Length: 277
Length: 311
Figure 1 (cartoon, rainbow over the protein chains, first blue to last red):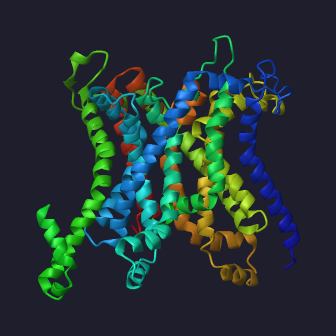
Figure 2 (figure 1 turned 30 degrees about the vertical axis):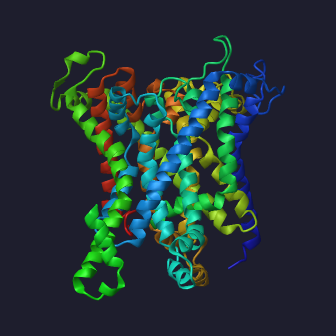
Figure 3 (figure 1 turned 90 degrees about the horizontal axis):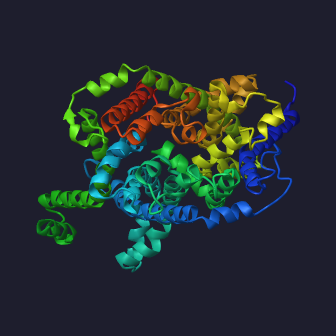
């Protein structure tokens, strides 16, 4: 057999390059579009020939988008915190305590995480109208829990299973109070898992479009993706594409930074939720 | 409340530990505690996912049109009959299947290549992982806009670059092409990462042994890699298929169902929200629910994918 190692190396390096281009081009494109002037937006070039920040001005000077951004941040944060608190409790019970119904809860969570959103959104739309939750923060936070709780329970159970719980007893033997043992020993070990579940939950809520599109109607609770989808520009004579691109960048960049900083955790969370489960 | 506290106290008291009934007390206390810890999550999940499904099912048996709120009545399966006998529903199922099959197939091929590239290259592994996570971090609506604005001749560079004369969004095939490309771009990272997780579990010795025996790269891939990463592969395909079947965001941003690209989720949305026909819309959404259940069962039974194996 001939040695094909160097040739192979070149091939895989080439493949890596293609992957990089493939992954980054659409993001660079929308970034580039957001800097184009209205006159040059239709010039068919990849990079702007004239640069401008006007699109960002337009986006931030309309209450339409800034209020949506505020709603997105608030709703996603609250949904994440609630789901982390309740999912940690459930995951602790599932991994540490002996009780019947454990596998039923896990199987049920898995089933719920596969529910098509469109199947529950209609019922919620009618219910929320009747009980006054339509177009409120709580009206979005509650449905977000329907997918964030199952995922969090899954990920946290997978992580908690790996924690050497005996350390807690060891710390107590060494004279730590139960609270100290929990705070100093168990909590630091559990935090990476909780953090991972938190990031994934936040991204899921931030990314949602269907629930937000159906269950909101005004600045009171409309989230950023919905605002983008219905952005019409400052006047009806202006093409909103540049402003949409700018808004898209504003919505995406914080998440991208978070994803890149915590990439290791996100990868382990994604695979823990799906494979280890 | 009072009983559980005494039970728990009894459980901790070391003096009583050796008596038999106390052991069951302890078990009972553990069970009580477990249920208390699980209760908030379970109740919430039932409330925000279980109840709306049940309510949607009830609505689907009614004539419930918000434009005529006083005309509500029980109509049995009539809504289902009108959905299932309409050509729109079947057309939309076909459209959804086109998007699902094409995007999942492409994602699998691409995801496998990317996973292999990540697995084999040591120097750029962090760089690839970081860049692969970029599409994952992009909001679906943003990804859809990026692709739409790129392919739209009024704003984009693609038609000019490749000299395409007919704008993609004026034809059905063109619209499908861009929708599928955007879906593939956004979700391939998920598949690639799952497959990479699978690849990491394959022992290196197997490849070495096969190489010694004269197996070529393709043989090693089909005879060793594929069978061994089958669990990860099946989970990835199952998750993505269910996800793709619900496709909504991308189609909404790109075409809103124009050019005959309407998917079942868009149809449900149109009935529920635009036409305010809750009865008919709920019938559509319950049918989508059953489709998803069917796909999940088919995968679990026929292909042996079981994400709940260890659960």
